[in-house]
Length: 116
Image (cartoon, rainbow, N blue to C red; front, side, top):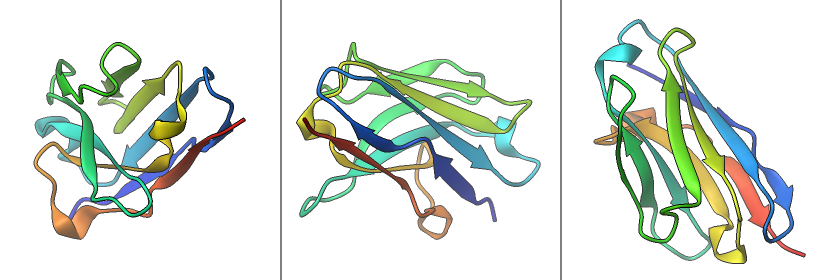
C-alpha cells in the first residue's frame, strides 16, 4: 500500500502563492499517475489537477486552470502543486492520491486558507 504525506499549506492573502508538496512511500511511485484533490468545508472532495507517471499534466479543474501547476520529481517520490493568484474559493484541505484515487491511501491533507 502506498501512503502519501502532504505539506506546504498555510494562511495566505488573496492574490498570494503557495507551493504544496506530497511525498509518497513505496518503490512503485514512478509507475502511476498522481493527482491533487481538495475538500472545502461542507463540500465533497474534488479533483484539482492530475499528472502522468512521466510528469506530463493531464488536466486541471476549470476553477484553477492557468493559476495552478502540477509537477513531480520521481527521484524524490514527490509531487508538487504551485498555486498562484489564490482566491478565497481556494480555501480547502488539499490531498494527493493516485490519479484514480485509492481510498485506503488518503492522507491527512494540508490546510490552505485564503483570507485577508
